[in-house]
Image 1 (cartoon, rainbow, N blue to C red):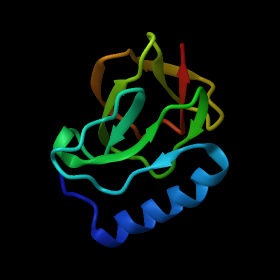
Image 2: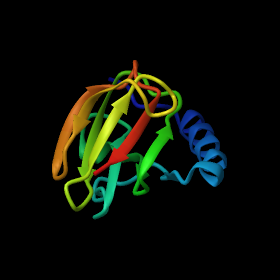
Image 3: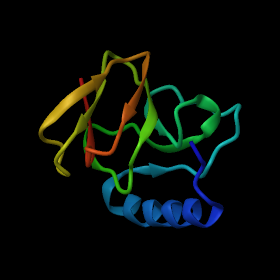
Image 4: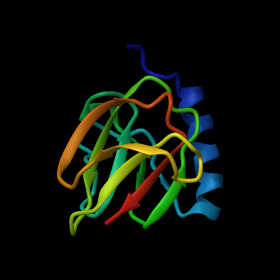
Length: 120
């Protein structure tokens, strides 16, 4: 699987940063191999491994829209207190049919999902 070009990464990062102002999403730039999902966060990586770098991370309750996700990505739930990250087909945190539980990771085809929801 090829990695996105630098131009595409920067455009995605800039778009996510602008959207983060209103949604509470923390956008992360492409990360090095040593970066891991911080304690208390749920993260989605650019690719299917930890060394692909964190694409987005969230630590606030509720629904968060995701944009331009296609193909397989690593979802890492490093939240606390038993919280789950749900992958949702609608863009408002509804029609959620896949969950990653605390302290678990999964490689998921993100193409059909339009939001994530963090819930206890």
